[in-house]
Image (cartoon, rainbow, N blue to C red):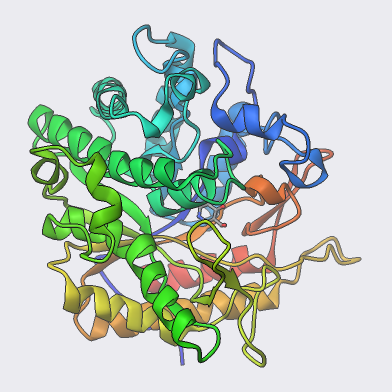
Length: 441
Ligand code: IFM
C-alpha cells in the first residue's frame, strides 16, 4: 500500500544542538551540563563527547543543502542555551546569536520552515551549579532565556517548542543518572519534574504575551508502558511508569492536574498558583515516539522498576526497541480520546539500525525504510480516524552523538563519517525524498 497524500502537512527532519553542532569552545560558548558529563570518565561509551560531533556549526550550509535536496518543508533544531547566554542569564553572546541568525536565514532562503526547540537538555553548567532544574529559580531563568531568544529570532521563526522530552531529562538525568547532570535522587527527580512543567508554563505565558502570532508548543516523548511479566507488581509498576513518564507532563499542561497516584510525591514542590501557570494554552503538541516500554518491578530501583527488552519474537531495532507501528497508531488515538489535545506534530520518530557502508559506497538501510514506512502509515491511519496531525519529522537528518551511547547508534538519513565529516545519504534519504515528492505532487 502506498501512502496517500496528506495535505496540508509538513514533512521534516530533526536534530539537537549538542548532538550535532560541535564547536563547543568557539565564539564565546560556555560549557553545558553535557560538556561536563561527557568529559567525566565512564559516563559515555568509548569516552566520546560532543566536542566536534557533526561539526554542524561550521557545515550548516552543506547540511541545509542536504535538506533542500531531500525536499523537506520543515526542520526542527534546538538552541544551545550556553552559546547565546554563556552564564545562562544576563549578558548575551552576540556571536552565538549570529550563528542562529545565519542558520534561520539560510533555512528560509532554502524554503525550509524552522521549528525551534528552546531546551533539548544542554543546560548551561553555571545554572546547574546554582541548582539546575531542582531549583524553582529555573522557571525565571528559562523564561528570560526564551524571551531573549524569541526577541532575536522571532521575526523569522514562528514555531517554538519549549522543551524536548522533559520525561527523559527528568528520568535519565535525575533518577537513573545515566544522562547529565548524572543525579540519582528521588526528591531531585520529583522537584525537577515539577520545575520543568513550571518553567514551560512561565515561558509559554511570557512568549504568548509578547507575540500572539507565534505558534507555541512543547515536545513530549510519549510511549506506553506494559508489564514485562504477568505479576501484579509489574502491572502496578507499568501504571506508575505511565504516570511518571506520560501523565506527569500531559496532565498538568492539558488538564491542570497531576495524576492522582503521583500527586503526593510532587506535592512538596507545588506552590499556590503553580498549576494555573502550568496549564497554558498551546498551539500544538509535539509527540516523539520510538517504542513501547516493557516494565518489570524492581523493588531496589530508585523508582521501583526497570525497563527491560521486549519479549521475543517481536521485531526490534538495534537498540532493542520494539518495532510496532500499530502501537504508535493506538497511542495517537488514545491521546485524542483522553485529552483535549491541540494539533499534533510528530516531532521525532526514527530508528537506530547498525548501518553498513557497502562496497559500492552506499548505505542500503532497507530496515530503516521499512520502519519509517510502517510508522508513517500508522500515523496516516490515526489521521484518517480523526487525530489532527500536522507534520512529521524524521529523527534524524544526520547520524549524531546519541548521548550516553556516543556515536555508535546511528539514526540518520545521512551517514556521517566522523573521521572526515563526509556526509553520505543513505537509501532511506532517497526513499524519504521520493515520499515527500509523491506527497507534495
Ligand atoms: O537522540 C534522541 C533525541 O535527542 C531525543 N529523542 C530520542 C532520540 C533517540 O534516542
